[in-house]
Length: 264
Image (tube, rainbow, N blue to C red):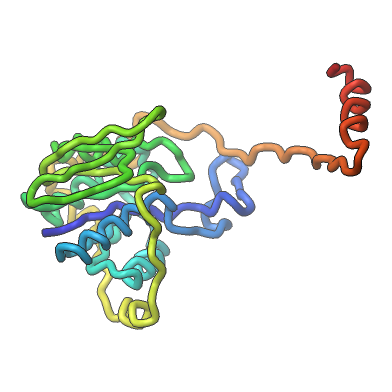
């Protein structure tokens, strides 16, 4: 039994956003973190490992620098880490990215009891497309926006968040679930895990390793295989500093300010 978790190293958008002259994000100039929703997916897989015993495999597509993120996940309790890296994959949009990750999951192998976990969406793109696209390309049933998981044999009872409530569904494995922050509280690395993570191998899947998969074709990966592209990235303008009104006459001050601006 395996829990395969798709993760992404993303720019820390809570800090300074660096943009190149061509309008693309300057990722090399920004601090990187593990995508927050993906940590909830990792925790869901680790809880499954704690409860029922399974191998947890973390998979990411990115530059060689993403190895540091995978080491952190190994320190949290992940058993195996896979880095998908190759110049042929550069410039992939969500469609091409899902093709490549699905091919990597095919190489890892999906068996009857296995579950593929993804975060709901990445904070650098906010599309929430890659997880569902992977499920479609692997021909797996999927449940998105998961807030609770219970496993009984080959059947999962899953709660899915809706705008006005929740939906309870049953789905058989193998399947794919996308996780949101309400699902759990991600655990921290522990000292033993930090020491042991450097003794574990990071597996690298390059183009040569994946090229025989039917999903990997020149016209379906990388920039050439991407039907969409980002025209320009930019940091939103900063809002002006607010004014704090204090004292017993704060309401009167506010009325005066609004009147001066002809808002009342």
